[in-house]
Image 1: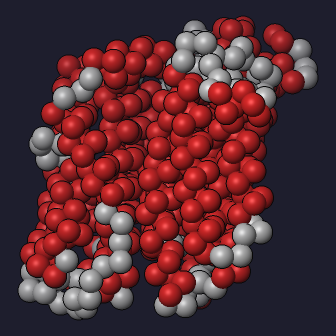
Image 2: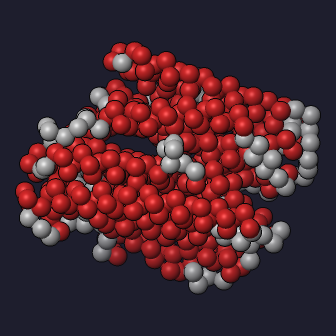
Image 3: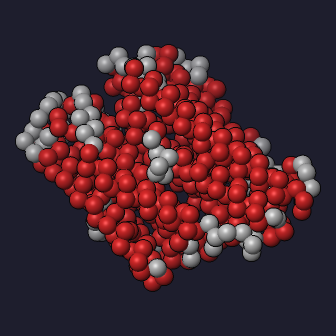
Length: 488
C-alpha cells in the first residue's frame, strides 16, 4: 500500500496522514517568513492528500487498538484532505492580504500556519481512530484548535466569538464524554475492562450482548454532545459567530470539514445501536433534529445582514438535511446523505473562498454594502453566483441530485415528512436567491480595486460539483452504495 517515499520513512499511508501534518505543524511554528510558511503549508496539505489516496488500495493495514481504516472512514478522510489542500491554496493569498493590511502580525502568521496543520492532524486522527476515547480526544483537540484560530484577530468581537465557541463546545464535548463513558460501561459486562472495551471494531462485534438501556442513554448524550459540533439546532449558537469573526479559511474548514467529523462520530454510534436488537432506533431522533435544524436555519437566512453569518446558517441548514437523510436510513437515503455531505463540503468551501476575497476587496461583510459584483469583479462575482445556485439546489449541480434523492426516498417511506422537508428547502432557496440578487447584480457599490486572489480552488470545487450533477462515475456510485449499506 505504501508509496516509495513513505517506504523510505518507514510509514504506511494510515500513519502518514497523521505524521505529515504533525511534523509540518512543528516546522511551521518556527518558520519566520510568510511566503515560506504558506508554501510549506500547501506542500504539507498536498502530501497528506497524496497519502490519503493510497488508502483506497485494498491492501490496507489490519485494525489496531488505536487506528484503523475501513470503507466508511476513508470517504471522510479523502474529502477532508482534499478540501484541506484546496483551502491551504486559498489561504495563501487570503492571509497575504491580511498581513499586508496589518490585521495579522508575523508572529500570528506562524501560529496560524502551525494551527492549520494541527487541525488537519486532529481531524484525520478523529476519523482514523479505532478507540472511541481517542476519537473524543481528537475531536476535542480539533475544537480547541479552531477556537484559538477564531480569536486570532484579537478584536473584541473575535475574542467574544471564541469564548462563546469555547463555552458551548465545552458543554457539548462534556456530554459526548459522558456518552462515551456509558458505552464503555455497557461494554464491560460482555468484554471486561481495559482498552478492548473502547475499541470500535471489537465493540461492533459484541454490541448485541450490551445492555440496551445503557446504550439508549449513551446515544442521547452522544447525539447532543457531538450534535453541538455538527451545528444542529438548538445547539448551533456558536457557529454563526465563529464564522463571522474568524479568518475565512477557517470558516471554509469549519463548514466543509469539522462539521462532518462530528457527524462521523454520530454515525459510528448509530451503527452500534442498530446492531443491538433491544436498543432504540436512533433514526427518529436524528430525523427530528435534522428537520428542526433545516426549518430553523431556512427562516433565519432572511434575517442575516452579514454575508458570512448568512452562509453559516446555510451550513446549519445543510447539516440538518444530511442528518435527516442518515436518520431515515436505508440504502437510498444513506447514499443521498453521503452524496449531499460531499457536495455541501465542496460547495460551501467554494462559497467561503469567494466571500473571503469579496470581503477583503469591499472592506466589509455587510450585505447592504456589497453590490454589483458581477460588474466590478466578474470572476469573483460569477463564482459566487454559481456557488449560490449550487448550494440552493438548482440543477444541474450535484446538490440538486442529492436533494432529489433525499426527497424521493422520504416520499417512498414517510410521505408526511416530505412536507416539512420541502418547506425548509424552498424557504432557504428563496432566501439565498433574494440576497444574491443585489449582491451580484445590483448597482455597483464599494471598492472596485482588483482582487488579489487565487481562483483555482473556487472554480475547481465548482467544476466537481457541476460534474457530479451531470455524471457520477460508476466507481464512485458503487463505492457510495457499499458505504450506504454499511450504515444500515
